[in-house]
Image (cartoon, rainbow, N blue to C red):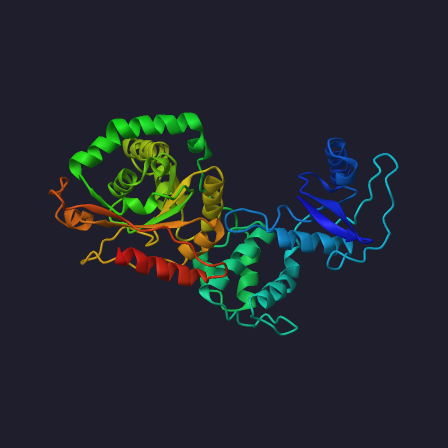
Amino acid sequence: MVISLERHGNTEPCAILLVQSGDDLKTTIADRAIENANRSLAEYQRMRYWVVWPETDFPRTATGKPRIAAIAAGAREILGVAGGKGMEDRDQPDRESGLHRGQLGRSHAAPLPRVRGDLQTLLQRFGSGGDSSTSIENELNLSSLDRVELMSALEQRYQVELGETAFGEAKTVGDVERLLRQPSARRTDYVYPRWTLRAPVRWFRLAVYYALAWPATQILGHPKIVGRENLRDARGPVLVVSNHITRRADIGLILSALPLRFRHRLATAMGGETLLRMRQPPRDWLFAKRWGYQLGYWLVTALFNIFPLPQFSGFRESFRYAGECVDRGYNVLVFPEGEVNNSDTGAIAKFQGGIGLLAENLNVPIVPMRLDGVWKMKREHRRFARPGEISVRIGAPITFPAGTAPDEVARQLERLVRSL
């Protein structure tokens, strides 16, 4: 990443590098990288200052995009440039490359004994723990969404995976410290299938869809589409949100209702725990059952472009993958209820707050949709719909002002889907 530094009234480019190597080689590798880059740049574009980022990765949003402001502030702190101004000429030029080296920061994340200091900084950012000394007994006093942000920041800093359930039960700073010190904390085993985004796989998926899935949807459900004109001027990518009735029919009905430009590039989030169980079924199952589950995993992943959205741990990695899909021009389908509707009335369940976080980070128009008639068929165990029984309703795309609270986004989306 390259940021600007104010120096003697001029703006200088400063490179910030992630170097995956031992401490003794980082300086040499960074020096060579800058030298190679500068060969292709004009004189006024060349980088004379650089910093090796002191951690294993940049701080990122929930969708994996680098937090530019935080990275720039950290680099200026390492270089001793308050707000990007007043840097002293304490660096000596390298005679061979003509570079001025900034002070190198730490090459690894802070050790766990410094957790309390890190927590103090983070808690102040969220308006909690404002006391000048963070005591181990201090209560967190955070909202649920603030806890998600805090947990994500800690996971990024220490490269661990904190379970949402365990973190939700943490009441004090000491509880968080103990969670971070547990040796079992590690990244989850979910797999995000980037191979499904490649053009040959997409062509294969579309061929199978129009040969099998589309005719089956029309014959079994022959859905009525309402509101497709709302997408006449939308180009995408978009985030599609819908109620969730059954895993077998919902995706097919939504695909049939979407215009071709959205239908042909759609990635769908599915319960991560369910997908993980399909991909790695229990070893005590019979071979035929294990094989059937694993085959089912590969089929749904390839034919419907499914990716995991875990409920309990690891969902931030899912957000990052969703962001990558959007960057590649794919639309993303999410069922914000979090699970299929097995209620006695079929009423739409409360939308989970995570949809607000995802919407905030993807920053694309959101298309509300609602499936009607599927719940009744499900309760009556029928495969064929009566004429006019099933309808798919599409609302107008909506965007939210920057800074809208994620829980408010979730509430408004729930109201929109209910009102369709």
